Image 1 (cartoon, helix red, strand yellow):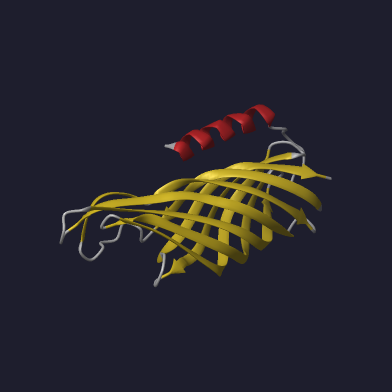
Image 2: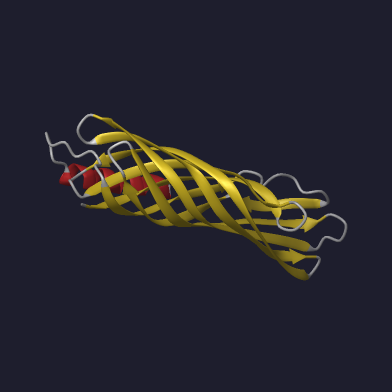
Length: 205
């Protein structure tokens, strides 16, 4: 629902700011970007031995701040920081009947190379690939005891998307990204993490 509202708002903004007939595809120069999206921990709601899961939410709101440089209209580089939000799980321990809960929060710094394929004057297809330094925090209660664990690792990240250049200086982009399996099985547990986002690009020439 959140993503639908964001996309609808961005489409309205694009319609109001659209400049017809001008070649607005990204050229060389710096840019900044802000995105909002929905992350998903694909394994968070999987069955847990000895626990009856009563509720689970494997999706969360994500936020990203980024900046990059376009070397030309086809290639560039970007760095960013993303908060992927919280995924939550609650259940009952089958042996004792005591409630258990867990919360997982992931953040990441990314350094990626970007590719852009212009399609017409204002629209382009995009791709990215690079490295993400991912931190996963796991907190919760088990049998009345609180726990907190963290795991840090470096993951290969890739993504596909599209961008519409509403004006010479403002673009609207959507992106899907996949960070692979994050976390550690022995401490935080692991999860396959992905993210779908939409946002604004501010270009500085």
